Structure formats: C-alpha cells, structure tokens
Length: 191
Image 1: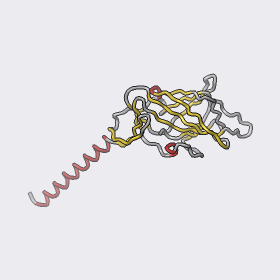
Image 2: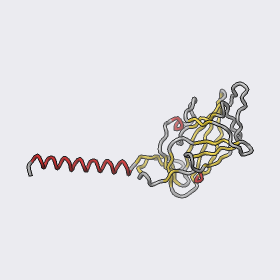
Image 3: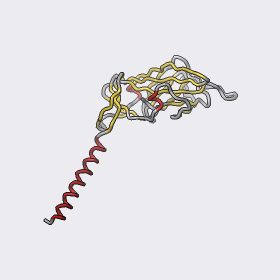
Image 4: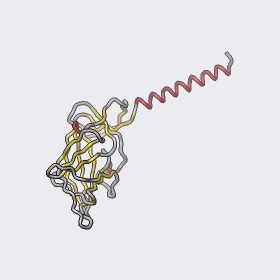
C-alpha cells in the first residue's frame, strides 16, 4: 500500500471515529442543574433518562409577595412528591380561577417589566432535573392598578402546568390575586 493511501486511510479512520464520538456525546449527555431541596449542583446526565415533569407529581405553595407602586411580585414553590426524577425547562402556564371555580380570562407573559427579587428568576430558562422531595420555583408579578373603568380579576386559585396538554398542580394563595390590564400576569422561568 502506498504512503498516500495509508495516510488517506488513517485520515478517514480518524474522521469516522471523531464523528461517531461527537454524535454519541451529543445524544447521550447534557449538563443539567439538579435541585435536591436545598442545594444546587451541576451534573452530567443521560438525555432521555428522566421524563418530563407532570403537575400531578407536585404540590405547590404560594409564597407571600410584596408590592410597590401598583406592582405585586410573589413566588411559587413546587415540591415533587413522587419517586424518581423528572425534567423541566421553560416557563409555567397559569390558569386563574375565581371563588366559584370558573376559569378567568387572563394572559400569562414570559417577559416582565420589573426585576424579580430572586436573581435566578431574571435569567434565561435552564434544564432542571427534580428528584423526589426536590423543589423548583418560579416568580410572578402583576399590576393591581385598573385602567379606566376596568374591573380587575380576582383569582382565588391557580393551576400551574409545566407544558400544555399536561396535568397541573393547583395552589391557593392566602389572598386573591387581582391582576389588572386584562388579568395579565408576568412569570419567570422555572428555577
């Protein structure tokens, strides 16, 4: 075999090994943030090893908020109550309900005109892996100043979904949420 053919064969073998190893790494590993209730650490996991989080795996607590100049800001903590792990990335989908259980017409926006108190709430979404007993959070905000003759919504419960067409976790705030401006609520990504 000539020297040129040997060099060419070695080059193609190297290119094939490099391509296969990159393809394998791209499909098999991902950096995620693992949340175990109190501490956060970065680990490498296998993609597809965890399922997408479902609302019926969690219980929720509405954390009292604060308000200033007509803007109310609060947060929600969701705790995984089932065995195993699941993954979530993105923004919560909220459904507001009144005292009678009727769904209120509302808008949930994933951009906020205010900075949320929790620094992670103002960052882009990241992939979170949640184990049993682990928690995830998100922040929310709204204006409670009516525009013109508008009557602001009065939501006594909130259903939270991780993605559309999936189950939700229901929570009841200690006080009704009263978002104005067509019941607009701003949300942070899950953190």
